Amino acid sequence: MRRLIISLAIPVIFMCGCDAMEKADQALLGAVKKIVGSDEGTQKPDKAATPSAKESLLDQINQVVKDVKKISQGQPAANDPLVQEPAAEKTSDDDAALREELNGYIACLNRVQSRTQSSYRRYLSWVNKENGPSCKERYISYGLYSLYQDSIVKCDEAAYRGLEAAPELPELEKVIQDLAKCNKELIPLVQRAVDYYDQEDYKDDACAQGKALHPQLVSTFERCLDATKKLGELADTIKLDLDKRDLKKIAAQGENLRFHVLNHMINAKSLLNTINLAQQNSSINNANYLAQCEKLETDFKALSDYAAAHPQELSDTFWGSSFMSSAKTATSKAKFLRRDLEAGKNYRRSLVELVKAHNDMISSSNNLRFK
Image (tube, rainbow, N blue to C red; front, side, top):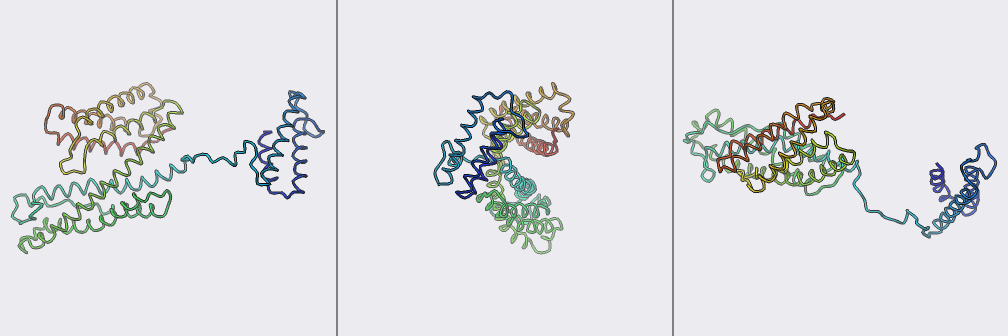
């Protein structure tokens, strides 16, 4: 308390003129003397304070007063913290703002990326990319998948928030603007093609509109998918760093369920990063995948063991049991893909199931509420 009173008094002295400062000095010393029992006053002397201790404290206060005078004359005081410039650290408010911005980008990606990839793959499964449709293809009835209309709002909101609020992430903000614009162009274009093939209008115009739409579809699909890839990579890098900072803060509080959940989610994302999902054939770096999968399995065992040993903590966590179930499924799918890779088998089905299970786990994790 004594140091608190002194520190609060310094700004008041700092604003005084020279004459006033002398009076402030005396007032400060008088107040301190009362605290240590050197003057009469309503507060009784501290019995535990010896005369030597009182003198020591008064010497310190005298030094403070001298330092204040130096500061008022533009001179740095001894050990003056005001002249030090410690490196800026990210505060919890900084991280909260960063997470809010990233969440907007991720919400946009979740409604655009997977559906756009699926629709484009569906289209290219029956049409020749280079030559376009002849409308005599065997599987022309496959057509395309419609895209999500609400993704326009999600991406526009994310783009607006990126420009108008902190933090400033210029590279990310440029990409989200590109994606939002491209997505607004692609959705109605794809819907025209969906209606055209679903209603078999190519039978009326000898495939004229199908041929005219084809280059526009390919160009816009690939432009949007390129933007989703860039946005995903940039957001993942920043989010991984943010999650690791969160993990470090949680670890400092001691082992708990939240720590194991976040650790597992970080490693699950690292596993997916060994797969180039943006490529048409989703190539996998086998060595990296196998190593990361082994780590994921180990981390999931640690998560499961902790949850089993702390049933009350799991019970107190909203959506805890559901998350554990989804994490178990996702880890199992990761194992199935690992076994396909080790055996040299076709892994397409295992990969699709892993990505779906991973996305389900992310959705489940968003519902978690730790006590």
